[in-house]
Length: 295
Image (tube, rainbow, N blue to C red; front, side, top):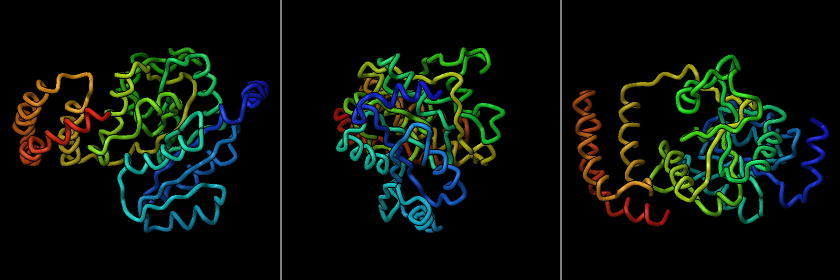
């Protein structure tokens, strides 16, 4: 490990610097575990926290105990995408080679960044790499990671293997500078949820690959959160926006299909919430088309 670290550190500082971006919102439950995993990491990184108007002491705690962190306070809840865009702009302006998106309810292992950088150097065709996202107990992969990313039992993937995936959650994303410059920031269409799907669709559209690195674990602590029907229906509505915004899809076809799909979902799940979103979505078509063209 030390020899690998020395090899990476011999490279130009400007070419190997990593900016870790953490968006916080009332994150006191996790802030120490998250910050301690990145401050003083085996591979030195800079950390930027973009706080979305926390009222639970998160900001004061970071100021007092993590003075090296670059802290940007929005004063209100910007949502995940818009807040991360602040970090993206900072990373590009200050010439970071990699950006690492880290959820406030997530943390990394001491060698996570080093091993992901090694994978990028061997496979520059990738725009986004993730570690294996695990539950807090480290006994099992995060359930959504397992569904979206794993086609084999975890132990059957050789350590260090880069595995292509169609999607991986943005709780842990290492993004190359080239990919970030090409794809740009998160779309304003998505305030919270759906922005990661759309960003990856755009990365694929521009020819980048997305994957995870087997044998490189990190934690996303969300295993026991309740999921209500209302929340699931909200995600169904966001899913329609994701499909319309995918630059690889036929826009005219999506404009026809998505209202029909939402009507079918509303009947299947007996959800008035989904039904109510059909007309507002249609009214947003011009804005959705414009955002899609820009991305």
